[in-house]
Length: 116
Image (tube, rainbow, N blue to C red):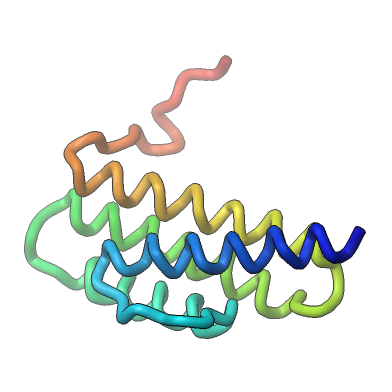
């Protein structure tokens, strides 16, 4: 069972590394969770301090959310692989939303989404 989770984690890490390249991160051959967390955090800082407008600042906030999820996954590394995968998935969702912001498909703020 742990082999499936390990394989899923490795695939998710490669996916996250590719997603971070879209935002300007350096390509990584064998990404680690901590390495990706630091890259996302550095990118978030660049986007948040940019003078290119609200959309770029929102993208920086989403990159910071991804960095936070990655740091959490890094702290849990080697313990609960399904929980680590959950945090990696949360980081992927944040990066997907950040990419949407840059494509002009900005998502509404969390407080403005009507209840289901």
